[in-house]
Length: 268
Image (cartoon, rainbow, N blue to C red; front, side, top):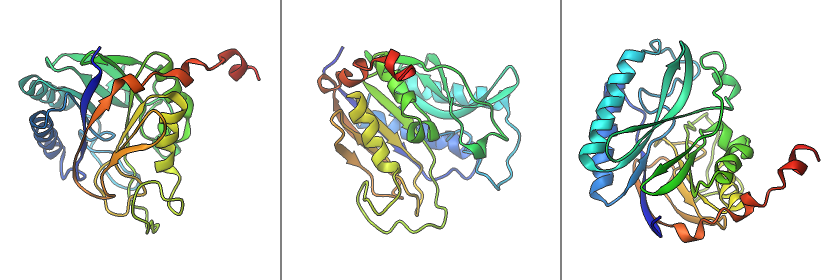
């Protein structure tokens, strides 16, 4: 296992079309690799684009998704970088929000489906099951998706207890007409969401990499929290681009996650 790992968090604008989403994904993969990153993570359902409430979208197209995933896999292989792609899928004709994990050879390692849906998503998607850990670039990683990472800390804890040193948190938090006037990360006058990411890192002694779309007025942004709950780096809210950072894996011990007395947590 390496002592350090360079990761990238892609923070794109919402795609104008599903084809534009694939093009942008491949572009970010190339840029991330050129900057020396070994893993790049994308926001929730970036391919084909998150289905926001109140908007109309085409039905989930399994054939188109397979083609899109293949293009992303080819880009991962060509640029020798692992990819965590926020997407959607059909499993036994059931629609799921998910993240597809692709290694640097272009091989698909599987999916982490969204287990805890936001109430607004339940008319479109079904909840997934299970928490998976993947090995990328010699490092164990976990994935929690949007609402479950903000509101259900046990989802991150489950991945950390399976050895994940980095938990990736692809999400989409859009502008809802609420004024979040304070700059910086985690200001107490803004919503709780950014500070929740710091908590997920501290309570599990692991890194927590949270990645959003670039959208002005959003209450959250892309950031990396360290195993002691401090902020490593972030992008200004609403800014498009890549957040690239070197991760000190020695610090990601998982100590506090491993000390959970699960019998007492389940039966207080």
